Image 1: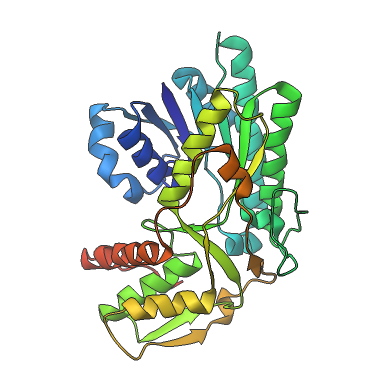
Image 2 (image 1 turned 90 degrees about the horizontal axis):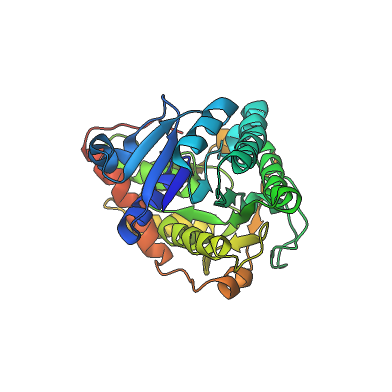
Length: 342
């Protein structure tokens, strides 16, 4: 058995690779752009060089030929499509790149899979299409967001993920691909990019502790309330869902919310981080450059559907997750890495 992961070098893709290597006997193939930073898979590079269950296929979601070639070579049993332009605020600055990568890139992948099915005998992979909780966008507070909640785009990113979401379901209904769609709520932990809220807060605290930043944390909108979960819990859910779809125990094309059981306003998240800081008297300031034109302020999710489909519940507490993220930044800065202020 083997698995192909797009977005292999990202936080979620690299954590999923670690999970599969530790908990299965699958070979893991990462679909990688040649210029991708390799920091998140640095612990795997010696295994990649040795051909020890981890392999790299080079390509790009916007290059159909490279996708078709990779699938023909790997003939994966499982495809986890995690590659995307994944930052909502960036999508306001680069809307066309976001739409191209996330919608057309997903269509390229699904078309490559469909065409390979007609030419490779017995090829019938379980295909994970990673959508996002951002598809729900601006919603009415106090209404639980379940899989039937109407979409309301709040950014070019959310529009792109609505397209991704629909493509996942369409290819199951129209062509019989064994797809499933996940809409993951806020997820964090080690390797989280510093463009996301809780990671930039952790990064700034680590910089302040090291004397590399004044004792002021710059933030955007703090009115949002969100569920939080550790990414390591989320990738376990991805794997368990893929098994169910592969064995036809879940109908193709189904969508699932994946969310943690703990929720916080963003100012509460800051308080948790400040309680872990090694220095006192850190202040917090709003930076207008960090504000979105439209924000999804209410992200509280009903995850009962996924819990009825698989034996899964989040195991890592939010405080453990935040602590692991802060230590990740402390370690990187100790090694001499000085990140951008953003």
